[in-house]
Amino acid sequence: MNTVTIHSPGTVANLVCGFDILGLALHEPCDIMKLTLIDEPRVVIHNRDAYYLPTDPLKNVAGVVLLAIMEQEQNRFGFELEIEKHIKPGSGIGSSAASAAGAAVAANHLLGKRYSTDEMVQFAMLGEKLASGVKHADNIAPCILGGVSLIRSIHPLDIVSVPAPDLYVTVVHPQIEVRTSDARQILKQQVLLKDAIRQWGNIAGLVTGLMKGDYDLIGRSLEDVLIEPVRSILIPGFDEVKRNCKEAGALGGGISGSGPSVFMLSKEEHTARAVEAEMKAIYDRIGIDYHTYVTTVNKEGCTIVNG
Ligand code: HSE
Image 1: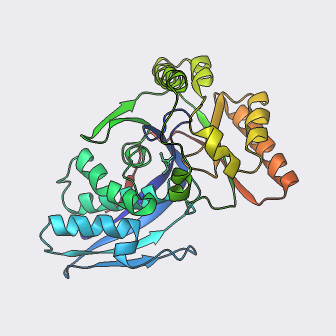
Image 2 (image 1 turned 90 degrees about the vertical axis):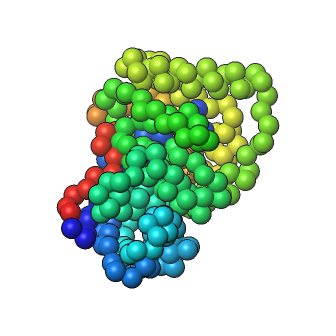
Image 3 (image 1 turned 30 degrees about the vertical axis):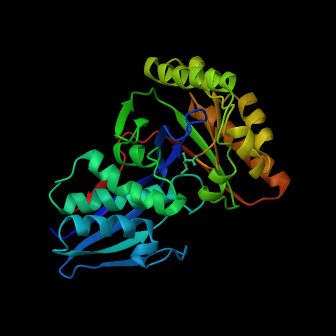
């Protein structure tokens, strides 16, 4: 078996209050990648979409992951990768993580699953480092594992899967690009103790709410006093989206990853659809193109579909 096809899902990182430490996987959107083992020790990349991402493996988030795996395997072989991206780069829905994690999981499958989940996460974080300048796993971990992930620590890697009740996720992607590296650079490096206390109360509340299936607690805990006040200025209509969606019945939500996408969690599908209608109305009025998704939490993560 020399070829494998994988579906690699979009993800929502941070989950509002858990900057760099919480994330969940979505059913939609989802990238499709086909990876083949080749005899020569090189990485060849073909884009099967219209995003014109670099095909030089050193400049491609999946490419750097495959180069690292190739090197780990003493350059005994190489990889040829076809990528059909459905997660738009710079959307805030884990586009770079889907490419990096999908490459790691597909390569591991072709190599007889010799690497552990933590090792795949380590390989995939090389892609995040290339994309944003910093290693973080809050998109990578849920992309690989599915469901909700808590990244308790990066050094050493300590990833915990958090059980979650059924949730609908509505995402609006206003068609502007926010580079993760830029959205990280504008953040303050220091926080006030009173803000930190509020934030870790929310993180603990969110994780407890998810584990207990306590939707009210989930909703109360979806509050971010550290990152959102700084980043939300990059997203036109953000405050109105949040206010109107909550009035429409969403539990809560906020910036997806580093934006510009905004996500909202709902208990019921009809609420998630009403939330989508609010999002559409706001961006129609502002006059910014957008794309919306109404989806659910993907409990499987990266999935091999053939091979
Ligand atoms: N935790 C990351 C951030 C996710 O917010 O910058 C984006 O990749």
